[in-house]
Image 1 (tube, helix red, strand yellow):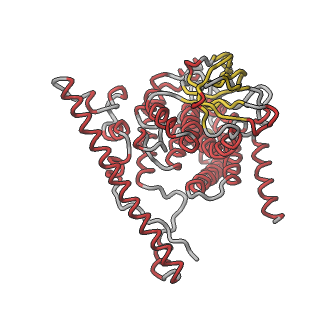
Image 2: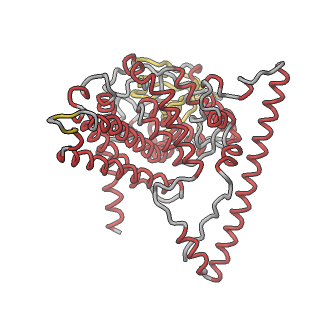
Image 3: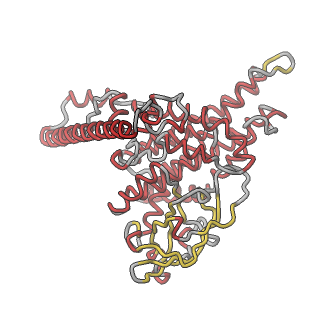
Length: 489
């Protein structure tokens, strides 16, 4: 029996943007040339006569936004009901030729994006070029993330991509988040991974596992102003993540956390820390629990690592010395932290694959124009057959990596198994990023070896793709295990 698909929303891109996306995202799209520090609300750059007039306008805008959100939700529910009725009828009477024809007509390629997704990609691409690109070299040299870039990400609505609109997010698709990560990585993988960890790990953990109280408290902040990080790795627990030694002991209505973390992305700027600690070492991985820890609770950010690549992204050691965390800040259930970590890292690997695809494309975009500007022996470099074969092969590799990544993202969105596909995407995309960035340096010769062009930076940045969120060997092991399971059965 062929399952009838849920009908598409017959709403224009403009209506979707106006109804589903938060005001700051909508204003950014409508007023792209307005400086970012004036994009949060239109009221910040309109000539108000008094504060009361400004507040009244903002209240009207908010009410209109909420009204449209409720309308979209109502339409969705009606269409879901219609789809359910169609499924019931189909089960009773079989699939009609009309339904079959409709399903055939809906078959699309992996490059087919919804209007929302296309609009998101175009907006992020422009944001990356106009806001991030001018700061890339300086941030890499100083090994710091410019606070203005982080503010810009929040103000552009890119730090709550999948977060529900009523909690301040864009309520967009998972593939939208993947597109955001990819487009940012084409310009700076450091900014991309900051956005990636915040969206695909931190926000997703809150959305899927947090209590309603924690969602209401933290998701609006994570969508508007507070950066998050995911604290799992320790000195003795890298790939063997569940060998962690950080302890959490219940003391009245608080847990007291003691221990340390290493290699924690975003930790230098983060305000919200998802900390994994064991409440009972005798239970092994079943004692691991996830806690929401605010920086002001006593998190100590220690040594900042000096890295080969993605230098602007902070990677620090953390120390927890008698950090008292309220009991209600347990995220999910006590002893179920291992389940959260496993499931969320499977999803996060698609984000890293997207970062590597964007990085590979960025290196390719930097090098290719040079091949058709420089001449040797009276011929453009790009017209030599040996060179043609090389950049043609890299283009094929990048496209294959992108399709693996989009496929894993769509499978995840559809609620189908995607662990193997996510591992494949991350593994292959990290390999392609290394090949593409290495070739880009070679194609540009001496120029590519200097810091005057971004090729060498992409080359340095790419190596982390085969290491974090599961090394390449871990991905191969995951793929092999799932293949063996399929064939043994």
